[in-house]
Each structure stands twice: as C-alpha cells, then as structure tokens.
Length: 191
Image 1: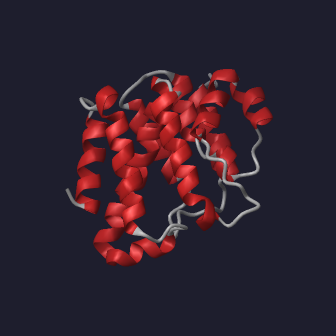
Image 2 (image 1 turned 90 degrees about the horizontal axis):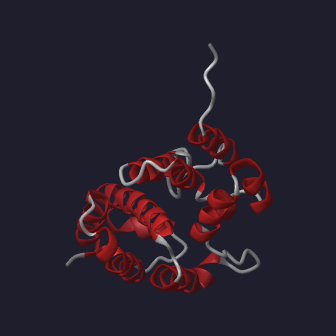
C-alpha cells in the first residue's frame, strides 16, 4: 500500500526544493537543516501539523522566489499566514546591512503586540535554531563569527536576542525550548 504524504511531509519536500543549493551563512551546511531543526523544536511544543509545516516553510517567502499565492494554494490560509507572520520585509532594493535594525524592531514589535501563540512559537524555534548555530560557531571561530552577518556588531545581536527572550518568557518560560534559548543567549552574550 502506498503511503500518503502528510502536510508536514509536503512542507519538507517543498522547502527542500525552494532552498535547494542554499547554505547557511558562512558555512557549507545545507540551508534546509535550519527549517527542519525549527520544525523539530516546534514539534516539541505542539502536535499541530499546520504549525509544524509553517516552521518548515518559515523562510521560503523571505529567502526564495516562493510567493504567498503558492503557499496558499499548496498549504492553505493558516499555514500561509503563519509563514507571512514569520517573514521579514527585507527591502531587497536596499543593502541588508542598512535595514537590519529596522527589520528586527519590526519583528520585536510584532511579537509584543500582534503575534498569536503559534507565531511566537515559530519565532522561538527560529531564534533557538539560530542561536544554537551561533554558539557552535563562536566556540570554533570566536568573534570572527559576527563577520558573516549583515550586522557585524555583536551588541546589536545581543539586544535582539535578549529582547526576544524577554518577550517570550511569560508564555514559554516553562518550556525546555525557551530555557535552552535563554541559556544560550546568556552564554553567547553574557549575563
């Protein structure tokens, strides 16, 4: 008997194709590892297949040629909206280094004022995956790790990661994912 692909299976296949050939900043690690890791983190907090699928897809609008219309047609309104909520307006007509702070301010304002629980869960998973990678690479490269980012000032990253921890503390502070995130933020940036 042929197995039927679940929504999450379909999201993994879609994201793998969308990110094909892409790598994580400053490494040879296939990019798809990040959204899969984010989905695994989300799956530790919910069994909702739409939220897990959205975690897998969370960077396809921001970093690939995928459109909102494609996501809506393939995955439905809720998954599409969750991905939209997690996507930054990269202002592709401007250098990323010039828009970094405003993009992070917009993300923090969204998390503080508009984001629902599922969107916050996606943000936590995304940022936890990112801070894991930063911590790992910091142990190997030291402060040279910051050179790979559009924003090269470690203090700016500290501001953003600490703000996310604080915003998500009340809702997710008892979750192992938030606790690991907060611990890594302290290790990377200091108390």
